Every structure is written in C-alpha cells, then in structure tokens.
Image (cartoon, rainbow, N blue to C red; front, side):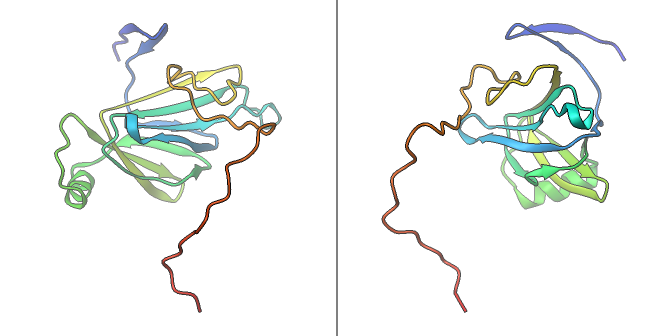
Length: 161
C-alpha cells in the first residue's frame, strides 16, 4: 500500500485501508450532532496491558446505529448488499458518504454512514479532550461545581403496569 502523508492540525495523517481491527474495549465517547461527528475511545489501561489511548473518529455523519461499548471492534466498508439495505432505511442523499460496518465477535453490531473515518493512538491519556478533534472542547465533568437545577416535570410516554 502506498503511504501518503499530509499535515492536519499539526498531526501527520497516513492513508490506510479498511478493515481495521481493535483488540481492546472501545466506548462511544461523544456524538457531536451539530458537527456531524462521532468519536469512540479506548482508554489507556496499563493493568490490562493497554499502554495507549485509541480514538476512532467518524466525520460528516449522516446516520448511525451503534452500541455504546464494544469489547473488540472491526470496522470495514459495507458490502453492496449491506449498503443497499442501509440506503433503503434512510433514503436521504448520501453525497460523498460511505457506510462503515461495525463488527464484533458475534457479527455485525451497527453501522455509521460518514464521509470519513480516522483513528489514532497516543501513549498519554488525554483526559476529557480528544487528540483527533482538539479544536472542539468536549464536555468535562466538574465535580466541584453545583449540578444542574431540578426539572419541573419529566414526561414518560410508556404506559405503566
């Protein structure tokens, strides 16, 4: 495979082929609807032999059906049959988007329709920020600050028995 490098936000980016597999836990980190981005993160865990933090970023997200956590994850491009099924469920124009299939040991467990996918590793934990989307200030938990005020009414549309 030919590798081409370019500089994006001070980081070197290399072209790589899918599928890509991650033999470690990955969790849904933020889904930034306004920026059409979804980020998965595998936290560093030296006790489990994981010395790096892994991030997978999907940009220009049109639709998705994902779990909040994967023990292991393989991401590949959809086959034509899979893509046709996903397009049938959401007939909006895809423009330059592609369907990425998320698979675990038990088979397909979701998809993301996106314009691009990036992943990377860092040896240091980054905290609540992201090294793939550093320009976006991800929500941070501040335990020393008061929580949000109480809601007046909470509605539940499901019937109770």
